[in-house]
Amino acid sequence: MIPTVTLNDGTAIPQLGFGTGGVPQEDAAAVVSRALDAGYRHIDTAQRYGNEAGVGEAIARSGVPREELYVASKLADGHHARDDVLRSFDQSLAQLRFERLDLFLIHWPLPTRHGGDFVSTWTALLELVADGRLTSAGVSNFEPEHLSRIIGETGVAPVVNQIEVHPFFPNEEARAASRAHGIAVEAWAPLAKGRAVRNDVVREIAAEAGREPSQVVLRWHLQRGDIVFPKSMSGDRIVENLQVFDFELAGGQMARIDGISMGEAGRGGPHPVTYAGL
Ligand SMILES: NC(=O)c1ccc[n+]([C@@H]2O[C@H](COP(=O)([O-])OP(=O)(O)OC[C@H]3O[C@@H](n4cnc5c(N)ncnc54)[C@H](OP(=O)(O)O)[C@@H]3O)[C@@H](O)[C@H]2O)c1
Image (cartoon, rainbow, N blue to C red; front, side, top):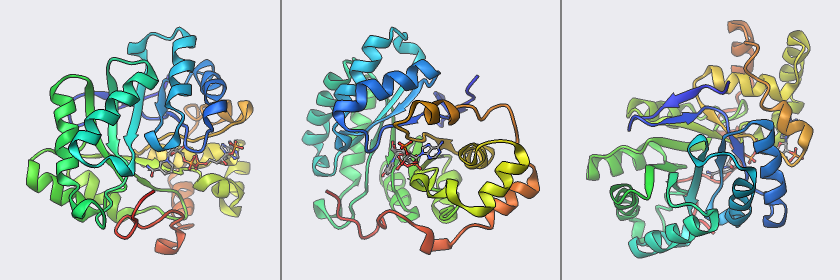
């Protein structure tokens, strides 16, 4: 029911998943249980969200076989040194109650920190893949120059680049650079943290299509080929955000949403070149 995208290492990732950024640890088990009940099979978490244990609890409770699930986590900003990568990855596995993780990402490149060295961090992720506890290694918030550097120095491209992408900020440059390297794009904040559902153009198209504004925005992402994982704490919205595979936007509707772009002014998060992390 949920289509998959084949990554450059031959593995497949569900194109739509559930985001857990901002879901407090005390709510995580209940919210992720709701998502699993609704039919989500791809969960996006991170060390910095502090909710991996809740995600693990929901998965253990669900009874969904491990091989039917795709779970991604991300390396926290303070863990870029090789030994911290390996140690914190073990902690993530323990919190999630897994023996193997599907996907692990460098959360931010942090070029102004750790001596500007995110290449040895990338190499440490590749060590995890080599020892079999991690299936696929990826990055997040990497600008074109960051991608060129890790690929140039190691010869290995990440499977995904998880970057801010939504109608206000389509982030075309980082998207194009990712794709040119054969890297799939994951669009974070696909609903622009809820702002996109209030946009007039989106609402107009939703009325034409007889769908919810959130569904129109998610369709726009999916038809562009990106991977999305909207976050919601609400049971109804969790279900609504999954019901996006039984309609299509016409070319003209896609173009009208493209027209919402504000370019760089539409960026909601920090700029990866200057961001120094948490
Ligand atoms: N790699 C990174 O640096 C990075 C950064 C940010 C996010 N992420 C990942 O991307 C995921 C998604 O991004 P996000 O959580 O920042 O933002 P988002 O998914 O674009 O938007 C989430 C917000 O939209 C609201 N919402 C969700 N479904 C809705 C619907 N159907 N109708 C109206 N409002 C709706 C939610 O409110 P309710 O909860 O009240 O429903 C929430 O406030 C995160 O959870 C995280 O996994 C990664």
